[in-house]
Length: 237
Ligand code: 0O2
Image 1 (cartoon, rainbow, N blue to C red):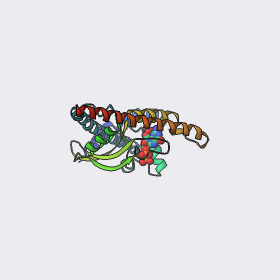
Image 2: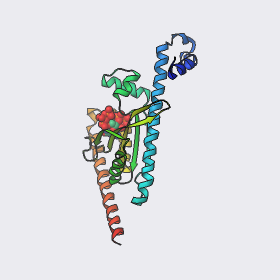
Image 3: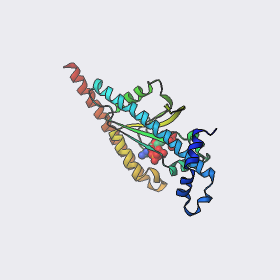
Image 4: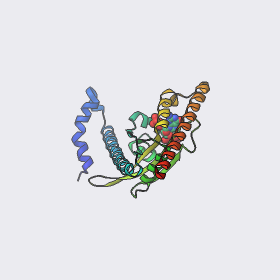
């Protein structure tokens, strides 16, 4: 008996062959169509995982906003890595460029960015998310306590969560970057200006960007202190 995937594959094969193959449709092998189909299925799993983690974060934000008297999450963004970036990363890692290899070797196909108002919110959100018993922490990199040489700051978590489908449950990996509005401002601009095009000749620019990151970090720290003072005053009064 055909599995559900095989049945769906044969149902869609001819249409996909026409769509991608054009006039040379016959040259599009069954294997290529199968890979395309499997890739699409895998991306669907990552999209479902993003939806689950985003819901968890939104629930936490609602709950914490009543106890903390402010929203610890300013915004949540997400993305699925594009096919070209996936292929390039596998190639850089020296891993096979196959669909199986994506799930085995990449942790950041599903990416979520959480933007918080204050530094302490980052750790509150991370702690509460990781306390949930279906969330498994795979790795944690604290680039806030130990910033990257570029000046980049963020808390990075790789987690695994179960996603329930009609016939099975699968553990899917998601990368979560948590940072303040100020850290995000720096990282977004530095990403556009410099991150992907570093070279030895522009050390001056790297230095300037690093100094901007330091200034922003001091401002973040000051904002946290001001908030703590305001909270203390409120609690006293
Ligand atoms: P993109 O285009 O943002 O997706 P990894 O690359 O994840 O396998 P590593 O070293 O474990 O390897 O990752 P790391 O250092 O934790 O950083 C991963 C992501 O953090 C990057 O993804 C960037 O989004 C961000 N990042 C890291 N360093 C910097 C930096 O100096 N500046 C900025 N702006 N962002 C940084 P990608 O896939 O490299 O890029």
